[in-house]
Length: 309
Ligand SMILES: C[S@@+](CC[C@H](N)C(=O)[O-])C[C@H]1O[C@@H](n2cnc3c(N)ncnc32)[C@H](O)[C@@H]1O
Image (cartoon, rainbow, N blue to C red; front, side):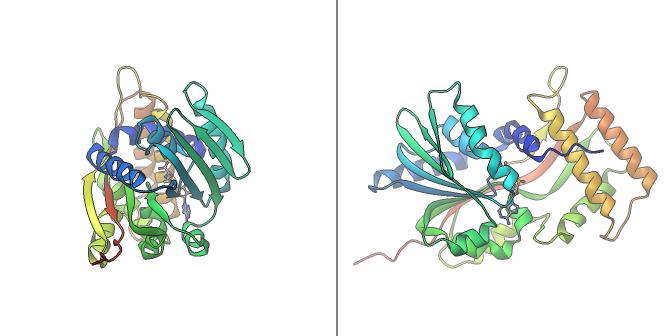
């Protein structure tokens, strides 16, 4: 059976994402948020949709990417197991850091030397949450998210932003799933896996490119930066770093499940698929498998208010 601990997968993904995220875009976002914080009295307001177990919050704190002063961070995910795990994960993360964590109803407050981040956690569909929220945010984050939710939701999600607010969609899948060393079934597996993704409601195996197409078409929205953020998972020394061996086993389990559903046209024969999976799993065990995907980070801004004379 494939391993199926989604929260462990999200935790294991952290180090893979850390390597991949485009630093130029992150630098631009950091500067933009700092300017925004300087220009206003109240807290900087962040909404993260599909927040998983909260690894982006940790990263933004650890990498000093959030502005100084108060930050209100709303983390929304549709999966209650993720939102239940998120405050505990953040509290554990602060244990050996100069950050104090105080749990409170609906979230957790993280107090560092020069910033206070009040995290509120919500279990909801992201679009429903935005539609029902009578408020706006300065930054909308959706990481590894837009390839699964349906880009028809994009205008509604962007409506969460205050005028001139930032949107940031890192690790948006964009049509490449590669494994090495070569196996004769690789192309068929990739094709069939992407077809399965496209057949799922909201799924899009070329979401990165399609987000860019859509946002360019949208009046007043600025695309500030686009960059590749491909995953590259490969053995280092005797094995994989951190928990990336589990990450690979989870990915192979996902592909096995997807190709097993067989409702998407071309079908690999059972023996070939079994050989491909056995080979890939053995290569993980032997620390030989290399896994590459193609993804995009996208950063931009909502329309600004009209300039006054
Ligand atoms: C691939 S995971 C990425 C999680 C996190 N952003 C990360 O990169 O670690 C996608 C996340 O989106 C959540 N999700 C899927 N559909 C959603 C929806 N309609 N509204 C809110 N969250 C959703 C899933 O539960 C999952 O946690």
